Image (cartoon, rainbow, N blue to C red; front, side, top):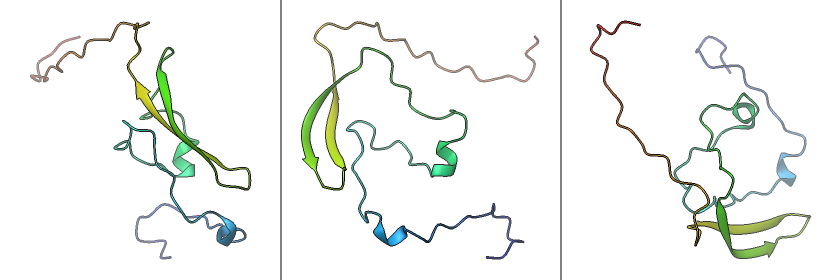
Length: 102
């Protein structure tokens, strides 16, 4: 890899790559469009992650024991019968006119 092309340094893991599963697990329904992140980005401080608030409720759609200690659980977020938290209104963002003073 050419180090002059502006890319960040890359670390390789080759010892056990062939023994890892070669398939992708499906995400939680409703979060399919959330971007996937690398392990390097996942251990950085939280910035653009989805934070699930308390009182979120999920329904288990299916379960699968795929062996080697890997269990796949397909869940879907549901609306609770009795909401425990009021939704927060989303306010439209104001565009800056350039002459704001603080």
